[in-house]
Amino acid sequence: MMQLKNTETHFGLISILFHWLMAILLIALLALGLYMVRLPLSIEKLRLYGWHKEWGMLALLLVILRSIWRVSNIIPHLEIPWWEALAARTVHFAFYVFMFAIPLTGWLMTSSSGLPVSFFGWFVFPDLISSHTDLIHLFKKTHKWLGYGLIAAIILHVCAALKHHFIDKDDILRRMFL
Image: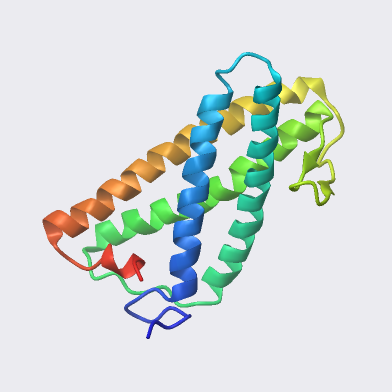
């Protein structure tokens, strides 16, 4: 039976669920973001922006919970060379920066536009800043480039996991499955 918490050698059920839930959510948000910005102004585009904001705020709330879980658990030891472990820890740190910074810049962009950020119609998040048209462009560019950075980190992460599985034939990838 799988343990809920991490051990010295394996990730626990909660960490694995957070990993895959966030992976699916973030990849879907990236795909939606890349798709919706290319659409002409329409009701469909506005609807997609609304969904992107709602699911993005869910991602922010989940990364807060995931961070609390991560600091309250041990991190399984990596049986890999020191430089690979350093690279892995650096990419994981970058993921957390992206997972916090992207939704925050989206929220700042929306706040500076004077638009609400609804959470699936249940409530509206407060504005982080007042409406400020000069900052919209800065937050929009920052949000976009952080998204591209996240895409690069995901590609690097997936390539490293596949390298460990198919070339090194170790259990690094298998530890993240149930």
